[in-house]
Image 1 (cartoon, rainbow over the protein chains, first blue to last red):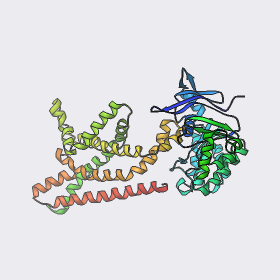
Image 2: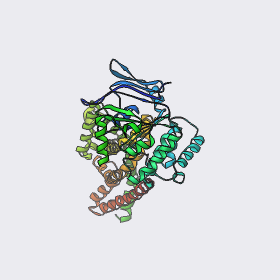
Image 3: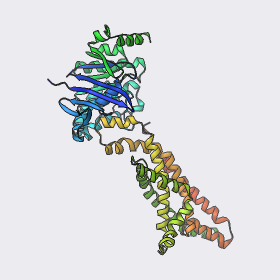
Image 4: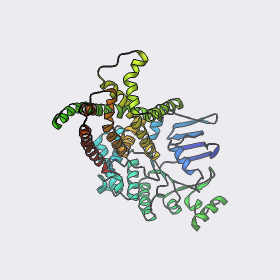
Length: 254
Length: 215
């Protein structure tokens, strides 16, 4: 069986600095994969390459067998717009800073893309959007505007907005970094509920407890390469690489 | 001449003052957006030329631009000066104000966070959909106070049409002031502009309030 997402030999430079070097990553159906590592390790860049917000310099990017980018003589050649649009329909992204549309109500934030981009029927989309908001514990906030919500609520709206597109895979870019510590719990609960429903997720995070709790695969990155990966009980509790041990010790000391 | 006659004569010109005002807004607001787009173009030549044109339009007197547009065709090409001065006046005003509006639009657009573009991109919005639905509505809200400023200035600037003897309110007032050796027409004109701007203030205040449903 194909992996849902396959990144092969990904290479990325920023103005002469190598950010990612020959990086390979597979995400399987229903897997919850956490990417951890110090800042500057390239984990956010990897996520941005996977979500087409950055272009790779070299390598393959394959979603469910569809090539978004294919390596040709060491250069990543991207597919045409139609294919990229098809690929964008396969994933959702939850941002660190939510990036909700402030001029739209909560409901419209969730509803507009499915209607506008996927050309789905409005009544059906609204029914689904209200259901998603209920799952996020936000049924009473449908008509509110983002500025009226707490950070945790805004992040749950942005999760609902991503889910409304029925993605096969959902990315999270440090989803709790902009939140007060006491609000991270509500996001964690939502992600855990999604994991129970077999949602495929890739989470870039600083929170080790979070990564250990929800994920079934952990990737530790440093200096633009994957140092080690495996089950959280291995990578987080019994790391084998010196860099991982150092990183985890530093995190615990904080 | 009685005060009533003065006011009557000047109100006749007030229609033309309004014509300059509304036509200038009608043309310069969209034209400014076009200019802003050219100014932000990735093509260095396009953005450079636009930048230069804007700097000339903002760096030289509007009065001079009025004279240039009205009489330039005659001096340059020997064309007769158009009877209806409204056309050159509105052209000069529209071009001048478009330059100011363009810089306001640009400031507003560039102040938008990159995250708004990225959120729309990931959701599959096209560039056009992103601009029209996500960026522009928020830009309009942000730049409203600056736009109000320009509109208020425009009300007063219409008086500059006197330099090309377009028979708007201030031109008529000036003529009466000369023939009657009286300062009163200027006071009347001042009152006209002030009341006009009270209305502008009120209207723009309503618009800004209407956009206050979100932050």
